[in-house]
Length: 350
Image (cartoon, rainbow, N blue to C red; front, top):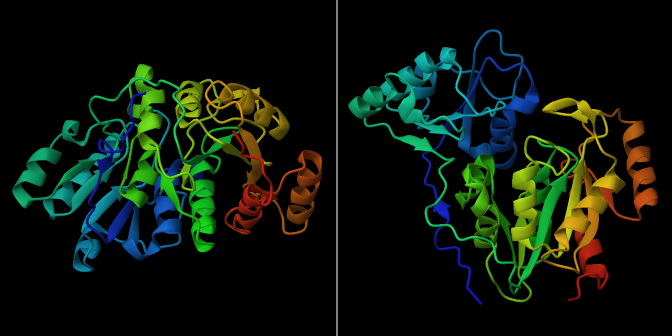
């Protein structure tokens, strides 16, 4: 059996505090990188930079480049992840000014920072770094499906940008609070920024996605849990490929389905309706059994931010009765109920 190790995981050392660049985005869903940093490492965030027509506010101070520099900001983190991961031409002047001021520029987009006109020169003159987080490691293996020691939980979803990273972080937090040996495993740019290491799976050549997932969650002690950040959705035609490779390579013992009850259609394919939670559970379990026939669904993580205060508890209670699973909002409720489910029942034999 080939031993899969984590030696090739990409480690980052980012200089904080950060200025989160939001540019001119119009929807919060496009600011998931910035929102994730504010939620999970607020002590590293000094403020945000927005154009006048930006409709997203992360609830931190609005700062110019000069103000950020004066307050001790060390890095401008591009906090948006628009579809396709490309830079707007409007952003470049601001980023060049930031680099010229000596601030590192950190990006998780597919477009390389070195390709932006004037940015390399500005960084070289000031000594600023250009950090591309979405840079896959070299020499990744193909997936094998070989059984690995240790336990793994993967967050999956009814769509993309629906709470898989938040849920994985909250589950890891809950496990660690009760003394469980657990690690959050990052597979996307924001998770890597928060965690400091991981593999950006959507930048990996398709043949090696499953192998990369094996590297992210290598063999470990029998009682150790890897809580793996999910990507995309099997129901999203734009990103189902990376979702399937991650599902097979993760070899999960448990899955948690993430859902937004206010979303009616697939984010990048508005002609397709969002699947039901039960349908999502069934398909993910069916596909996951290729590499772990004992996989189980242990809970549902629901983004209830779009529900009013009165309907939120009843929705979660009714869904829990329907599925026979704990259903929680990871931000409002935490994930203790899901972790209780894992350890209260012998559902992970095999």
